[in-house]
Length: 129
Image (cartoon, rainbow, N blue to C red; front, side, top):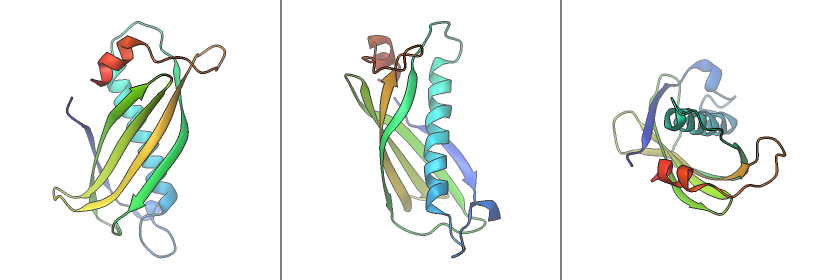
């Protein structure tokens, strides 16, 4: 499956006191694109799905993003096994191959009623394939 992609324009609201994108902002974007990707995958489906919660984030910064920069954000699910999946998110400067940051997030799949861990169904494996 091709990566899911979004564009972000860096605004003043994204900056920290050093005038570059705040590290917490990257994590918000990681969660935002994961949610948007998931919603795009289940759009129009009538099945009941579980909930996704973060187990861990590992983020690596390669260069600074500053006010006015355009970021191309790509995500895909790399692994699904048991009740966990691993999602990769990469931030690139504009249309270039210049990597700004990358994040690997482990997500856990939960039963929507009990909020207990739930094995990821084959239907979801197929959505991510």
